[in-house]
Length: 54
Picture 1 (cartoon, one colour):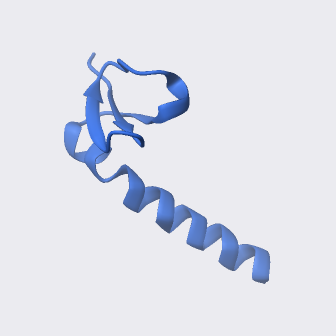
Picture 2: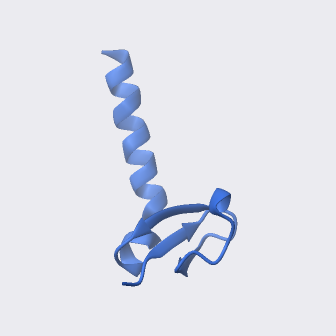
């Protein structure tokens, strides 16, 4: 099964983790999920910050 990763340095999706793991977010099941990785990270961070405030 193919996995997709988002490279935070190049801002590109990679198939089967071609770069160093320190540059990658994932794995994701689809190219589209990986493409939106930063949006998911931002949403999670905002939710965690809100929980910390409560």
